Length: 330
Image (cartoon, rainbow, N blue to C red; front, top):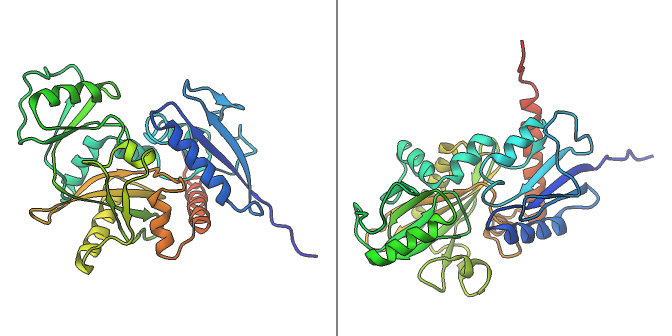
């Protein structure tokens, strides 16, 4: 008689309180469809926009969630991708997909990400970090010329991002970004091309073939990503072999600099006038919707959506086994 293989009990957490709630829901729908039902029993945990869990919340106690083998947090943005959810899962002693508390927190903060990249000798665009309330938008003086991009430091999917070309537009942009975060980043506007490069953790991590994003607007906005369906994707990106290798090298270096694990999508800018490549940001829980490029980049390299999920889950289980070998008390 053939031996019966026990299914992996996988908790899928999605929704959440951030402005990326709907993207999280769509990512979860795609992941559920792709998971092999012969291999996984999926337990769904939905968090509404008020922060209420359904059907129940995960308890922050080791052994209190005995029906879960591994967690796949698909919470984009605040309260999911910033280390808070990862902290809960660490307290619960649960295996989980993706970066840990440190990697999640520093990667979510665009200003900290840039600082760590700069310390590692990696190229980032000139920028200024501000805290809401510490400046007067009418009198703020920038160390670089217009146009600029104003961003909430701790948000994704281009939510709250505005391009400003004048002092008046800068004032409005700062007010918009301040609605979403107390910490803001102002960057010199780069006229050029936008790229993404997916990274899969492991020993060693690997970087996928990059893709190019060609927005239908001035830059890759939330609407362009998820509503208009007019942005174009070049897969693979039209790059020389040297440019492709350099982008992959920088993606891996960024992944390491911010202590990322499991998965990450590094976004790049290439300035048209100079050809200079800049690391823009890293996303530790990239989108997994039907149009998301993280799985599509690895699919181009021969790893199917389902195989990618299997690998991410196995990496999570491996890390948990390693962590549980650590002694916390004397």
